[in-house]
Length: 170
Image (cartoon, rainbow, N blue to C red):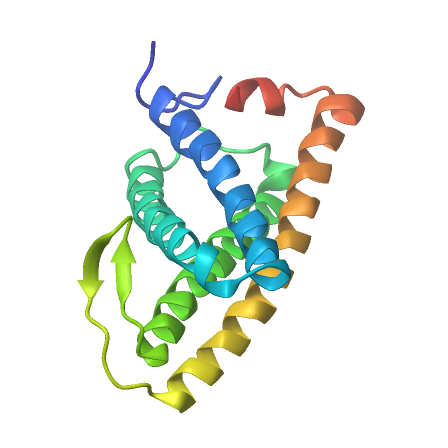
């Protein structure tokens, strides 16, 4: 069992963080639909808590990626595509998480992490809430498109190029 990435395969930590983020992102989507369809208050606490958890995982993942830099490089002819794809994924995810946090602070309702208060309720800052809710929504829609592209790229590597990309992450 390798903790660090190698030329042949992603390490245990990289794989665990990657695959932990997948169901959390799906839960974020489901909780967003739940908030729209039913009652915003019933799912908002869960949505915020998962967002904070994802923010922590993203920060850890970026540090871990820096520690592992150069250990598992894509083939030379795919380097730019891989770099741009990962920058889009990490950038949009970071933007969504930070804009969601700022919108929550602007709402005046406060922010809690699974019931543990982190930012107390306070006065509403309408411009902050509205501006970052818009950023949050646009970035989230873009992220789902980039994730779809990511999945298509992985499947293309798996079935068209047969280069073991999927096996390196599973």
